[in-house]
Image (cartoon, rainbow, N blue to C red):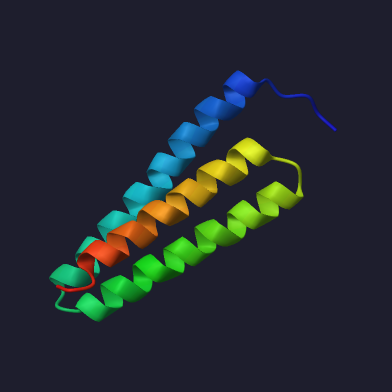
Length: 87
């Protein structure tokens, strides 16, 4: 097993999570602007489930920090779904 520094893990994690959330939001915006608000909610739900699944796998593999970050991204996407639901 390779030894990595926690600083490098933190930097990579910050960049990847921002990219994940930004991609999810931009794609949801494109779907909503195309006139499919239900499709936007479905897309955000799929992204939230994928992030939650990644969090579970990361926790099981012994990466609690990355798992917690993925769980946070999942909660953010679910919160965004809740805000957009009435629209």
